[in-house]
Length: 180
Ligand code: IMP
Ligand code: MG
Image 1 (cartoon, rainbow, N blue to C red):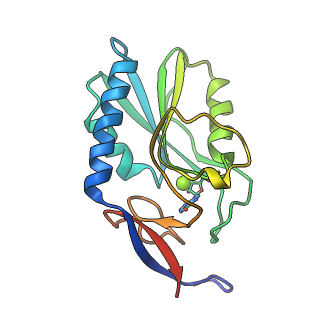
Image 2: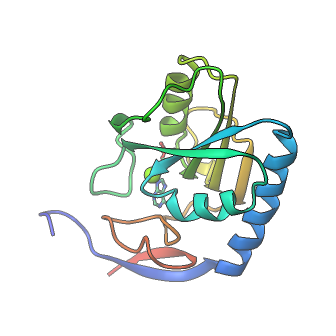
Image 3: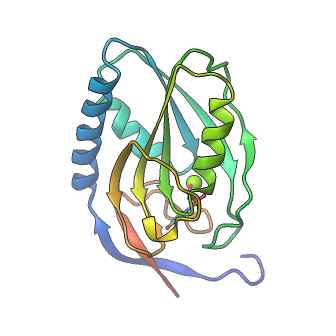
């Protein structure tokens, strides 16, 4: 562990796997209705969105492709640095395409606001945003999230793709963390 890094462990289960799966089904259905008759490109933000994205796309009944972006906005800490860097970009052009951007959690809004600007610049036909979690208490930059899984309080969350210091992404539920 790096110097100065704190140790965290999972706390209380906040959202169960069953609840997440059920919500993914509702959102997948809504996306299918909203984009009816169209093809979509689902863009997952690595690494946190992977588990949630896989649940959502299983419930979308449209022709779709997937792609991924990786960005970094946090170091080894639980507070945003406010700086976004693209670590991995999309494989193909998105010009004229319907994009569903899938993120794990919206906190300050910095990451999604930045990605939205970058992607809109590339001329998609439509761009919608889906996030597993919304933490409105952290918001610094206003951002419209079209499909929100769950709204959470001002607590740091891990599990279902979300990490603290790259750990606990594999937990099949959403939980708070506590300092050890
Ligand atoms: P934002 O740019 O402040 O909206 O933060 C978005 C990113 O911060 C997410 O993609 C997460 O990687 C990370 N993040 C924000 N809050 C949490 C949390 O409670 N648990 C784990 N990661 C978080
Ligand atoms: Mg993330």
